[in-house]
Picture 1 (cartoon, rainbow, N blue to C red):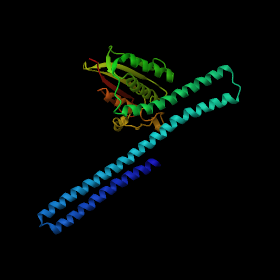
Picture 2 (cartoon, one colour):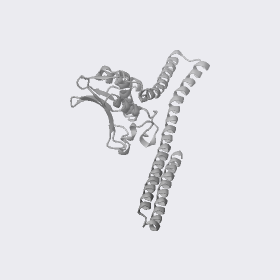
Picture 3 (tube, rainbow, N blue to C red):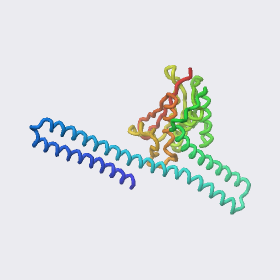
Picture 4 (cartoon, rainbow, N blue to C red):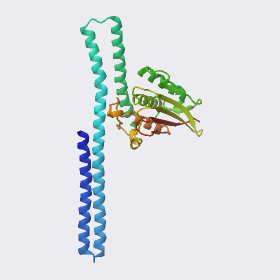
Length: 297
């Protein structure tokens, strides 16, 4: 209902801008019919016409952009609220159970394990938001050090396997030749973790994710993360890297997340002199995300 209302607002401002331009143009045409003999008046009128039309276009553009930005911020707040509230509610429920009931030792250990997992999820959401602020800050420069890229990728793959309880054949790492890059280890690790986590989350119940590294033209190294999941509409391939932008799961299902992961990936790539992009043949046909970074000299 909210999305429909916002679309109507956008359409209203676009229609209003178009209507104002039409009125201005018609008034100018009528004025020309009366003043066609005065050349300097026509020139002045044309200048004023172009100025007014330009002002209306710019004003409409900023209004529409502000509406869309507010929509993205609302979606981000809702997503973060959900990501924070869910683990807190789970932890509270288990603590209340432990406080009010006699639980045997095995069950108690299971409860502790669930609460620790929820705590990790809570901390990851908070860290994601803080990391976005750090990466977006121009005053903070990356701490460039030599990094074995294959080692960092393998570390991220192992972390995701443990986090989502995935078998090795479901999340497979194919390492290319050993490559050293100069990069901020924390930022590169965050970018890779986001790519792999996204591939797993959007794969649904049948996880088949492949991560591979390979040199490109001797100057760059590319990390490719392939999945057979929901896929991405062609119109979304560039949009998904924007801050707060999210693509719904298959059938409109909600995928956990804040809409910041791919924004972090592209920001890290730019800060390191590389680039990031997505490839997909369409909905239901899987997707490939590529993070390309320069090789250290």
